[in-house]
Length: 276
Ligand code: HPA
Image (tube, rainbow, N blue to C red; front, side):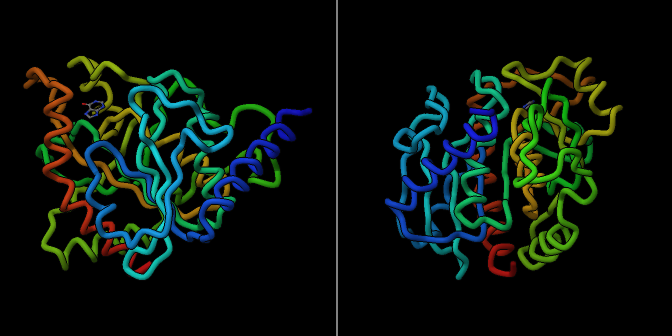
């Protein structure tokens, strides 16, 4: 079997399994990042499927365990939520990381909303801010589209024009205004992790044009764009990476700040979903 035939067999088995558990066609997919739990409370749940039960889903590590796909209605829209994602630093390949994105598309997804926790490098930001991602720099040592291209999914050489949908960027800004939310905007750069950055690395990434740095999101966004989805993405700025003002940063701090910012991003995403 060719790489692509194999992929389609696995995709179909995963999709058939999910459909046998939940009869639902979501139009919006949401990937919940670190600390962004409470959005789930606003969803009128229709069903859920554990990642561990889905054929060909990546096997969970400690980080991703208890991951599941949640299906339901949010502000009148049919959504599928990834509660837990797969990171490159956990040892997954880029193809494995984006497999759920392929599955959500096959289930009906047209738009994807992605969130993450990130370090801020733009000195106008403060920890706890929400940043609208308007572009990215892929600093991962790879790309989920490497290998034989499946022309049924998308083009061999996708352009990266307007990856972050212009109408949705404006929508997010409009909704933030109505919610009195200070919404930052900028470029997200992704590294492998799991180390945070040295002062020299923060300085370099800032000079390269990035406003925030994290360890996720870009593979999923590339796959979503490749398969024709509209993309909206946000970072919660959980710590500031200012090279001339470094201080210790623990993962507990990151998770705590993400949790504190959670309600802001929850309301912003719900507001955007309502108007999509
Ligand atoms: N660097 C990389 N990833 C992160 C950071 C950071 O400072 N904060 C949260 N995720």
